[in-house]
Figure 1: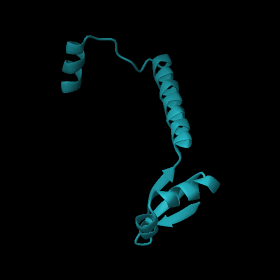
Figure 2: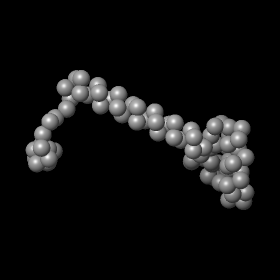
Figure 3: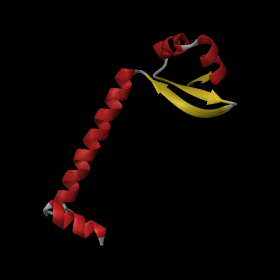
Figure 4: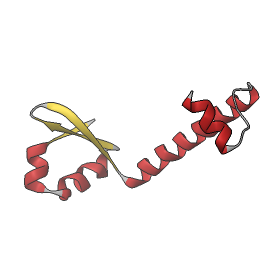
Length: 83
């Protein structure tokens, strides 16, 4: 994984990200020698979000199949979660 220092980002701006992400899927930004952030291009980010949504749907279906759901009104729900 490619590493960019915070100082490089500060001095070179977004152009260093653009140039780095041409050859790499992601770049780690370090601050004072410690890895702090990861930057990815928008296409990869959208794909990750799509995977997260697919997992959420899968988990919801599993909860429904296992009977881990409640059908109730808003008032009933509020009473149940308030206790």
